[in-house]
Length: 256
Image 1 (cartoon, rainbow, N blue to C red):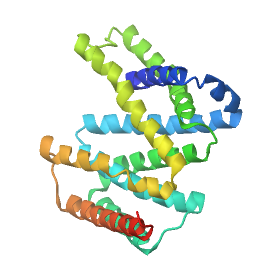
Image 2: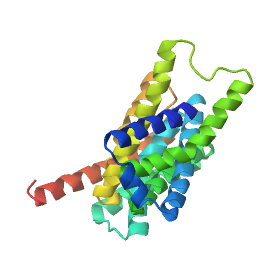
Image 3: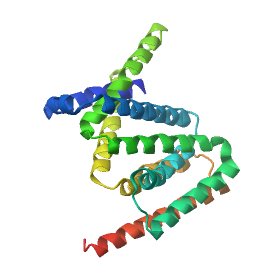
């Protein structure tokens, strides 16, 4: 995780320099925005820690469930926090997902905290990003920069105790640097997206990642997929079908 943070800062600083956005950053930054981004940094840092721990403990299915729940929690936050409205199909979709999560909590509640922690931290961070009046690129740079001191301190402690802080060969080191790319680029695109569309709509586009995680958990890692998983994921997928149908219907109504 420490390398993800550090190399994300490096990449974002290079992008800001190439686009000559440092003046924009200095002119728009404020104590309030830094405070809010400190909150989002804490939320995203927690999200990454939970995700990495869960994957290492063979809970990839639970992480997939968490990121399936994230868009629906995003929709709810859009309704509650921003006053956005749901139509009937969208409300049914959210209700189905809530039912699936409830059944999973009853049957497999011991690991439900992983899914809910991932969903709550990411969706809340996204909501805060939307309301902060700051360019997404500059905002993400501030956010990751606030995490960087902790990341550097962790690497220093690791080195102090005689453990390696880089890979064993050049290939490993390249992959460590690339963690910054695969971390910063999706977060940057998400930050841009939530600025340009309703927050509830942004939530509907977040199903691609957990779908891939689900397939990876079941097909690649051979994690058990029991009855409670079937019901929970079934409810969420049916809800997703309602969302997709509603979106397609809306596009046709607009003549797109």
